[in-house]
Structures are given as structure tokens and as C-alpha cells.
Image (spheres, protein in one colour):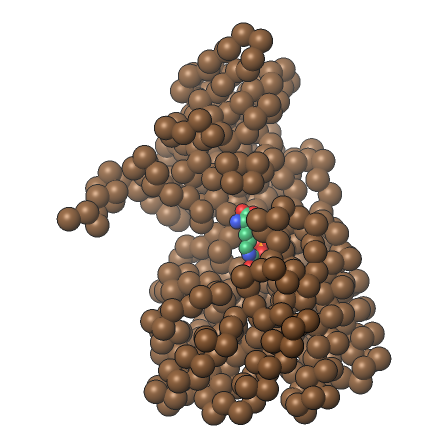
Length: 432
Ligand code: LLP
């Protein structure tokens, strides 16, 4: 019935997450509030690890894409689950290091890493730098030379796959700002350059074809293209690529009707393509890395809001205004993303209304959801938006100088704050 196993309705008829009553959470910690379920996040990590081990004889690594939701506690959880970590900026890297995440399991991505970011990554012994372009390759080689180090790198490749998702989050096709194109020969040129550079060591190749993908075929196709490229590299340069990172992008349940592919099925089908293609082209099966972000945390987080006012505009629509909005969840205004919403304190009641949930920003487009089914709500009710664990907190802003909400982690009926609510003083902290 629910988008995640961590959600239920308790004996009071309230929405519960991880055994905690959401109405109580709202009372104790205030709203808007992000709530995450630890057990389910850990279970997702373990399911991924098990399926990569089962399908690749243990020769694999699951890397959490921390852009989906990064904070110290999330990094600690991933470290304790033996995950790798994908970071995409100096800030995400800093967070990981401050959480004592093992540097050698950090993968540093980004299409325009700055000199300072690369220096920082090198100085801290980041495991792999995923090089996006020739300017970066050259800069990295020089910086590594200055630090007397050899940078372990992978190349970000555009495999040219259309992953049938919202065009804003499609990154694998040739017209993309990310990575080296295969078709133009650009990728092979980079490999040859890296071979003669003294301070970089080429460990692997990487691709990421998009996000929230519900089909297995694009992943199979990307795996095939990448293994073929590995064979071509061996043929043209003699280099044996030892690591293949197939990226993230696995779809999740935003709506109860969504049917994402089970990890095991995805992994089994892609592993077959990898293994068969390697055999056919006589290349050794590389270590396989995957980088899920959304599917680790997305459905395991919710946002709680308090209803301020309800505006019924006869024959047009009913606006339910909540105490957050595009500042804590910009995904509707950016992508018209679908979410399931419910009244947390009336979770047992039928959804008899069709409403538009609006935020509090000075912006007409500041909506959380349009024409969504909801229980009859009034001022003071708690509205829960489900599946907001990924790309909500991490994309939040202070527009209108609205402080970012707190986040709590729940575990078997207990809750703890993992990110404090911002204060007005936080808002002016850098003002001079
Ligand atoms: N690896 C790389 C290189 C990526 O660029 C991404 C996501 C991931 C892994 C993780 O993908 P996931 O498993 O989470 O789909 N803000 C958008 C999503 C942007 C995704 C960017 N890259 C949204 O809210 O839908």
C-alpha cells in the first residue's frame, strides 16, 4: 500500500515511520521536518551489496551517490555498511572526510572540478578521481606532480544511451556536459594521453546514463557499450581496464503505482551482459561498481508540514498552504515530480479531496503538488509528502530567507536529530 516498508498507520490512525508517530515527531521537532528511516536505508545498502556480490563473485563495490542526501550521519551510516561514496564537490568531499569516511573509498566526480577541489582531493588521498575532460586531466597530472603523488583515475564516458527519463536528468547521450564522447574518438584520445602521463594511473572507466530509470534495457546497453570500449582500449593501447563503474539511476517508488525493477533483477540482467560480452571479446571481467543515490534514501524519507490555510477557489481549485515549499523541495517546480501526499493525523480517513499543495514562497509556481488526492484538511493538520528522501534536503535553498528544516533519523520507534533546523542567525551568518 505504501511507497516504502518503513511507513504504516498506527493505532491512533496516524502515519508512522520506523515505528514513530509522525504527528508526535512534528510536535517534538517542529515542521517542516525531514524524517528518514535508518533500518530501511541500511537494508537498501545491504540488498545492493548482496546482489553485486552474488552476481559478480564478490568483485564489486556499491558506492552511495551522496548528492542524493549528504550529511555527516548519512556518511557514517554508509561507512558502517561498507559502501563506497560518490562525492561531486569540495563540500560533499569535506562532509565525507569530517565523518571519517575512508578516503580510499571516495569517488570524486564532477564536470568542472576546480583546482582547489582537486588539490584537496589529492591531499586527502581520495580513492578515485573520475576525470571528465582533458583540461581536468592535465591539471590533475600537474597537481599530482606538485604533491609528489600519482592520482588514481577513471574516465567519465558518454555511452550515447537515451534512458527515457526527464530530459533534465538524462546525462548519457552525446549532447551532455558530462564526460568524453565515444563516437568522436575523444574518449580514446584521453586514454592514450593518460597512458603517457607520469602522475595519473588509469584504473577504470565510468558511465552514468540518467536518473530514476525504470527499464533495464538502457543499463544493459550501456554495459555492453562500455565492455566493448574496454576491449577496444586493450586492443589499441594494451591497457587492461580493471574497474567498470556503471553509475546509478535506478528508479524508485514515488507513487504506489510505480513499479521499479528489483535490484536483484537489474543486477542479474546487467551482469549477464557484462560477463557474456567480456567472454566474447576475451577481456577479463573488471571489478563492477555501481552508484545508487536515490534508491538508497529516496523512499525512506518523508517531509512533514503543518497546514496554514486552505483556500477554496470555487470551480477552480483548492490550495492547501503549508509551512515549507520549493525551498525544502524544489522538485515539483523543477521537474513537475509526482509525489504521494497524505494527512498524517487523518491517515485512516479516505482521500476525498483533490487539492494543490502550495508552499509559502513569493512565487506562484511554488507548489509541492497539483491536483493531488488528500483527506479533508484544515489549518493545523500535518501533511506528509512521501518519498522525499533523495534530492530534497540536498537541493534545498534559503529563498525568501527561509531557514532549512531539521532532519531526524528514526530507528525502531526512536528518533534523533541528524541535521539541526537552521535559525535566523544562520541566515545572516555570512552577511557583513
Ligand atoms: N552517479 C553519477 C555520476 C550521477 O551523476 C548520479 C546522479 C548518480 C550516480 C546517482 O543517481 P541516482 O541513483 O540518484 O539516480 N536532482 C535530480 C537528480 C539528479 C541526478 C544527478 N546524478 C532529481 O531530483 O531527480
